[in-house]
Length: 274
Length: 255
Image 1 (cartoon, each protein chain N blue to C red):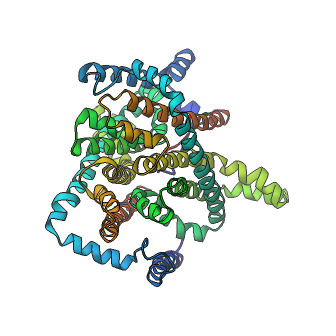
Image 2 (tube, rainbow over the protein chains, first blue to last red):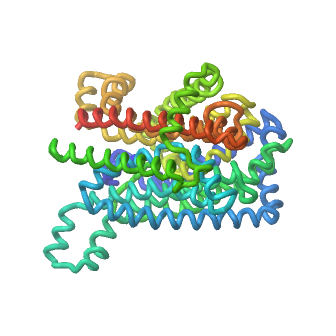
Image 3 (tube, rainbow over the protein chains, first blue to last red):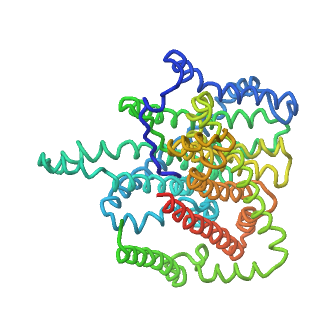
């Protein structure tokens, strides 16, 4: 994950670019090119490889609608596990990261360890968690949250250490109380990065949860995937993947819209990559 | 910047934390505070790992397969990601179309796609590598675009004044200037491809280190399982630390 924030003045970036009308069209029309391209590619693969290997997009949509009722209990289980694991990861990550970021020294000491913890394939530890907690929803939740907690903590700590000194000095000169300082200076300063960290952490939690469900579980969407992987057709499999993808996009895109809205208000094109 | 003394104290403190964590786990696992049936001391896991590494067929069947898949995924992912990154920088249309989605790629559990890759690409290493490429390319693309975009305009003007064309500009100005960013992308991509390859092997593959862990778990061979876990973690941590050190040097020279 790159913690780099590239802030380019929107005006600079647009210099020498097409007129306003074109820009709008690209901004709001352009971003639909990728989903359309994926649908076309999907359809092309279906026509080249045949319905057995790749079910058609339209058919997959129909199957998804048909099976949604049957899959509903598993969907609920997955969403519930995800909500719990993400809430715990976000709580520990944001509070821990904030406390860590208060000390420059400890931030420098601990952040490289968090980078390693984030980058290591945690899947290898799932058997250990299973042996300790049994084949349970708790095991899946614990496994899922260790995916999300490290990026959230790392980015929150980075945001806290990099609050511009000048803002803290302004707070000093206004003699703000601790509560006012937090509410008016600290929180607004770290909010964008914390929100980005939650977006990245959510993806990590979801990935961990689906992995856990796919490997060893008795319910949940990931469990259904492994069941359908041996089907003679791919339509139920693709419908499930579509459902999982839509679920991931729904949450991430909502967070992203908040980030973009804020960036536009401030005249920045803010990209926190991850 | 911190002085030499602070840097040394930081390293000492970091080492202290790592030693405390490792020693704490080791003691808890040896003394039986942690369930002996479940948790194996790190020292024993590492010793068993050494034993596995002495077997030739372990290399042939599992270790080399996994390493090859990781490298293949990283190389292909880097090439694809670099091309996409240059595209993002060159074309406003590509940028507007792709940028919002690039950030969302990592929110989708890509392992869910693995059964589809098997259906399309067949068994063996190809679908594993495909998942690895998908995991590593976006990181390279995002960072390549950042690197190209933050190239100092004065360098470009000078090169133009000397009559360099687009290809020459990319090779002689943008690439050297953007290289630290591209490398940062590759460092991320290497971690992502390790995670993707080992994870994919773990789920449904029939060989490789990931599969070996899952297989040992399913057959209650806890000793072997811990040995392979140790090997994977040592490789992953080694790659992160090694590339991280190179990256730090690159960015320092850059500054």
